[in-house]
Image (cartoon, rainbow over all chains, first blue to last red):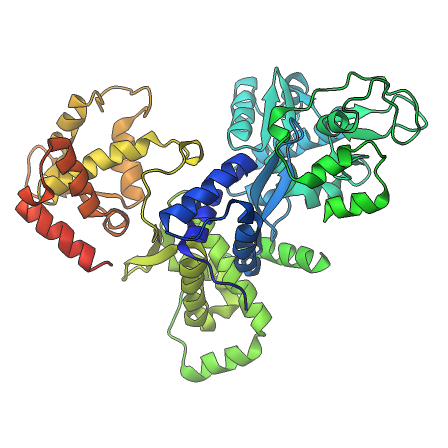
Length: 268
Length: 253
């Protein structure tokens, strides 16, 4: 029999429901807050166990608190995902048909691009050709804004990317619908949209920026972990937020190329 | 995984397809009908129905829309309707034991439900995670005025109080936009407030009362303690309010 949930677990879950996604820093603070509010025993290193209790109880409801990594800075996040409807239908109660179509088109563009982005210009053009109901420029901007606010998309200088929440929640959908387009990161083996690609056309492996940063940390002469060609990109700095992370992420950054064994352990 | 996908497609169908001929009516099934239905459906099937109802209610509740029983039956329960009582009993239990929520019937004639929170609002919620909702502040001022004035107030009093707080409902507010609409429409729809015509008034006059969601979610004692603090007095100095607040606390709904 699963462990029953205390009020501290319920409060944690309620906050997850109203936020959709929180960073691991927030999760730690929230864990503490929930335990203290309800006089439950709090041990900082037991967050995963704490979440496991919630997940066991959520399972019959086809819901799950799932961990994922931000493509922007490599920071860990927790998102409440709905397993019963892994595709866009989860959004269907919040958006109109043509808004959903715009979202699908946005995903198409992003998945089809090399760097995991879609420009606002391309999106505005798309909106003009929607089959359900065309959108004017103003309206399109408003809807895209709503997607950003509701944490489905990120926007930076007119370039749209899939948010961390979107990737965690729709991973299965993305893997099914875009199976020919998706690339897996050579380091962490998760889907990679924003990252760097090996310049060698024979090789062409892709890695997240934060995985590149950790993998090549401290090396003056970076070479592709797959084909050993020179890595002809600027190596990004490790973001401070992603540093205080689980040790498994740091293992991958160790100088030895990742073997399939370490990869498996990382994925578990 | 394939199991999941199958569930997903079934779930989607049940939520999205609205069978027009099905009115979602519900007549009391006989004991033998219930017995037969219990044998007809496997425990796994019933488990899944429970999960679907929970999800359906959670989605409705996100927008604080009251949930109507006919909608639950028509869109989710469907051919399991003879097991309505069984399913809802387990839905109730799930909300309490997993989510810390309670499904409350606020209209027993038309069978309308809302979800209320069983966990008390905590004041020190880490700010970064509390989706800032300025409307809550607006609502609490109004609930406070109503409570301190003995349970119902004319709308003009509410408008004047808000004006003192620089919220003029006659004008567009930079935070709330159309404040009057939020108060008399949104809060009323969400069952936080009741907005009713006072009979035999010319010109028409309206008054506000606490709605059922407020009654079951908001602690009158906490509210009184807060107001007392503002006035630098003891809550007991408001005899009538104190009596009502403490009796509400001892008889939770």
